[in-house]
Amino acid sequence: MPHYGPDNPDATYVPHAYLQARFDTGEIMLNHATTGSTDKPALVLIPPQATSWWSYEAAMKLLADDFEVFAVDPRGQGRSTWTPGRYTVDNMGNDLTRFLIGHVRRPAIVAGNSSGGLIAAWLAAYAPPGTVRGAYLEDAPLFSAEIRPPYGQGTSQVVGPMHRLISTYLGDQWSVGDWHGFLAALPRELPPALLRGLAEMSGHSGDGSGERSGGYFGGDEPPQSMREYDPEWARAFWTGSATASNDHARMLAAMKVPVLFAHHYRKVDEETGTLLGAVSDLQAAQVCRIVTQAGQRCDYRSFPDAAHAMHASDPQLYVKTLRDWASTLD
Image 1 (tube, one colour):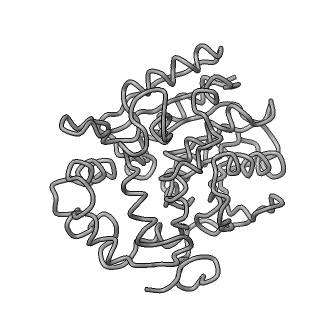
Image 2 (tube, helix red, strand yellow):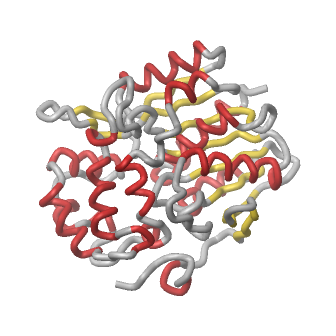
């Protein structure tokens, strides 16, 4: 298995439809792609863990008439710098703050999916006033990505066991790289309910065939998105170091701009209490309660049949949801 990452670009990267550039934050080079006109409102798209900016390619085509779109790679993903030992939501939020101030240079809507939604929420709370106009949190794992959340299931009862396997079999910076061992471990080490839930979150049938073969993980070779991903991300979220200084209730209570919270597929396994999905109904309700108590508007949209990354699986619905909400912002 080849070693993937910025030091082996020929084995790691493939061409894409949009030109890419890198912005120097002072610590990292932040990779991004841009489309649309500078006279349109600014929109920054932040992908989920183990996914690069190009998961937004189809959505970017639909958004270009209404926004100047910046799709980014957080540190440790895509062509952005990998930073061993420094994968925290706080660091990633500060990376994007520098990008907004130094490159976008005007108030922007930030829209993030999954862990990208956590970064968008961080920006809505902690970026300097006037930097962010609104935050679209696409199925963001608020509370559920914490080790000991005040509401509902923590990461060990959600997707955390998958992060543990990624860390074990692939290793920080792909230092282990046992992809076949990872695939073999899926049915052996993860509960069947979690495997079904992961398949359904990703838009697969969840009938079991994909879990046995590793189908939705790319089969015998790692999918392109995983090749561009530092597996240390997974360890940071499994151990809690990524969120240790990012208390979600405190962050939500510090919101300074309107929020759109889009809630996708979710179920709770009756036998184990495992959350199959990114965030439970209880947790989503607490998100909106805390944001509203902070004096900010919180719009909630429920899409129980949507894949976790709706921006990739159903870009038309994603863009309509974003555009309709953005049109109501000042």
